[in-house]
Image (cartoon, rainbow, N blue to C red; front, side, top):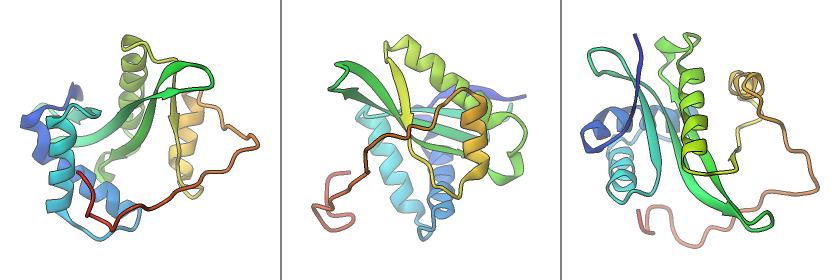
Length: 157
């Protein structure tokens, strides 16, 4: 049995563990302290919404993290889905889909027009899930750019 809950202070340890594994999936070095600090700050400052998939014994199985944002061109609220992760032993069990559906319900509840996300070109399982749930690849005349403005870890957390 899977329970999807909104992560609070009491969930930080479980989410941080999964977040550390998520970062490793994207080839970052393990750093549970950094993961814990990052997740604790997001929750404490109400800067993101994190939904956590838990077993009946409250052990963490997966999470999705959404950040509120806006689309200036359309003049609407949107959500940025930055992180979706399911621990490897629970993959292919519907947890990722359940988390994504909860994220969609949350978007509707908070009045967002849409959810935007980026994923690695190599993340074929994630792409298959997104497309199965109705997400459309956005192929437009845009490029993604990024500018690092401070040393890693030096900025606000």
